[in-house]
Length: 166
Length: 263
Image 1 (cartoon, rainbow over the protein chains, first blue to last red):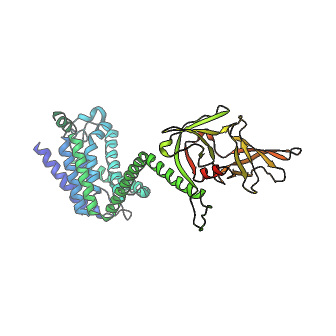
Image 2: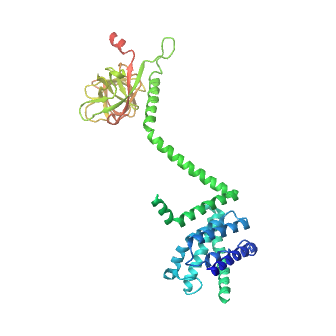
Image 3: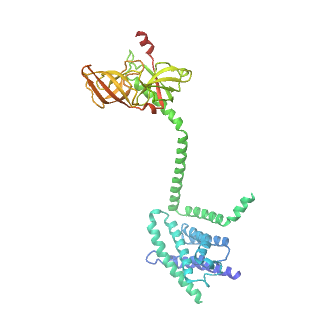
């Protein structure tokens, strides 16, 4: 339990610092920045308590918004993912949903991709919808969701690859 | 109370989510002018919709009151219109006809001698031989009066003859119903020296004490010429459908008694 808490704290701090110090100023293609901190929303234990996770997700978004001068899109997108994550786990992993730490080991690769993809897609869609906050900007919202989503997926996949080797 | 607490505990995750979401929205509104203006716009449109619906609902419930007000206003306008050409000796306009609002409570067009009943009677200053008109045309003449109701001889009654004339050349004749079609009446005794065309407007003649001059009745739909007798038989299509009328005006001719005494 203590080990798990330390791991969570580590990822929380790592996610926030890397996002603020490194990824926020990447400006890939001129304007695309990966949202690396989403890794925290992925690595939280599948069988972990839900209420602390909702609070942690909310805090993560809030801290990021305060540090990156964002109006509040991180807070709402992280909070929503925090709330709907158990449904996404059930949707992606089905019978394996109750396996502790199932994300890292013991599940099929397609299930992991589906889970990560869903979380990134929903998070980014909410993030850009809140940022633009206008139906007229739907093309920009979709374009940014796809481009940033791809970049975030690559960064997250590389991080997971690095973690598993280690 | 226990049930409320249970429901609260059962949905605690959702409630927590909503509370935090609400906080996030306040946060976002306070941090960004753009989002603030968007929220304000949304709030304004929602408030507008709510007030609009509320107004529509209250308007619906006020329809009767509004209807009564409109009827009253119409009555006054009708009265002004009827009396507009009546001037007293000093050049001041004088009120010759007074109008009262009434509702038809029983109507019939099936018989050849039709009567109808209106919801105003002696109590409302209704007297016999007053003319009844609607917004579109004439309805009939008061036949008998009780305390609260009056019986009216409908224009759809073969015994009733009404003085009417052509609006364009004042050629007058006598209007009566043949007892067949409730939308059509006959105008007799129009001399053949007058020009008659289909579509000509027929109005009241003003020769009787029941109706003032110039109340529209209908238009010419057909006519026959009887050269040997020297007059036309003109078919009139009525402006109003007597069977469908509800709100009517009872006209009181202030000079009626005086004219009858002279006759």
